[in-house]
Image (tube, rainbow, N blue to C red; front, side, top):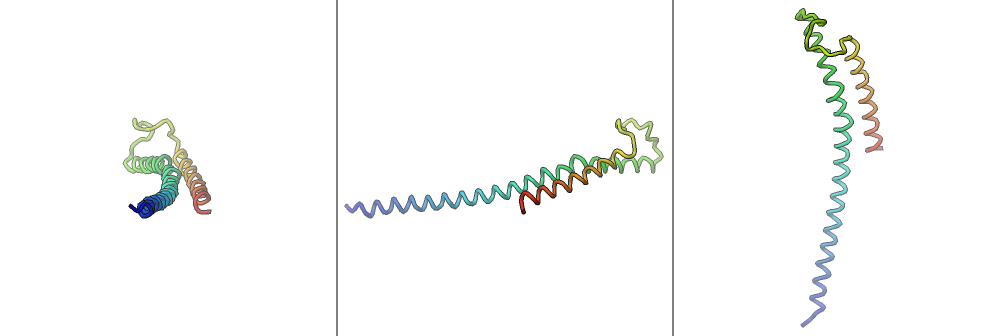
Length: 112
């Protein structure tokens, strides 16, 4: 019985497993970077749209529709505590600043 041939097959099998393991680790790390970019984009940029920009634009649009339909804003039961005209516009401005900051941080962290 020739043991050299048998031992060569075992070592080549372990070598191919090691190479495959390294390939899998490289693929996993490259996907991790891409997933991190997606999470940064959705958390930082799209979060501002969902939490600040869209609701304040809905308030602005709702107030314009209420004025067009001659609904008295002071007697509106669905009105919030902040009845001033400038509050949604202030939030739109703050969300624009937050978007600029988040885009800057996203580009600085991932591409520079």
